[in-house]
Length: 276
Image (cartoon, rainbow, N blue to C red):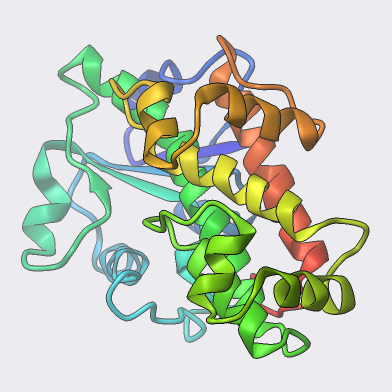
């Protein structure tokens, strides 16, 4: 489910055209409803096309300040169930720079292109939704790993490095080297403390698949993305197949959202963290 919100009905209808017909899109003009449903969406898109009200501005500021201080929004009743905004897939479309003017000096995670003036911007938005969903899925898994008291230190250290979006490790042996132990030790820890019928290698492969999508931007080929991970595109397809998931082709948006949803659910099962 993709949730889209804006203060202007014409913008809501226009943004809806960015998504494939197969995508389930919910138009949520009400601000409180949009905020309360953030944790339940595969990705949420907030289009700022009118100057925000003060209360909305403060909440948006907290949403966007996640990279620097990852502040909790627990003080706001509508957001009390969230423990980390960084794992919420959220895109802010700052139409005509309105939000940038209001929040000058902040580091914003936004799409600065105008969705009203250029058709290309719709393509950028359409591509950014599965990318943001994948980024947030990695952060969600990392939050679960951090909060899982059952994990040995070496395994936690290795997994957290693996789950970094910018990480370039892609094998069990490489994450073992990061943790300064051997691969056999990590596999043993996985079998004893995680498992659920899975292997450490299968989890590494799933992370590589999600990480690849988090790096895929409009105009960048899958071969380019695969090479960054020292892999070929057919390896990524094989990872998806091994997880029982269809490799996204023409119907990319809903299939990638399906894959990232599966990954979040899997991470929730594997790691007994309390982060959401």
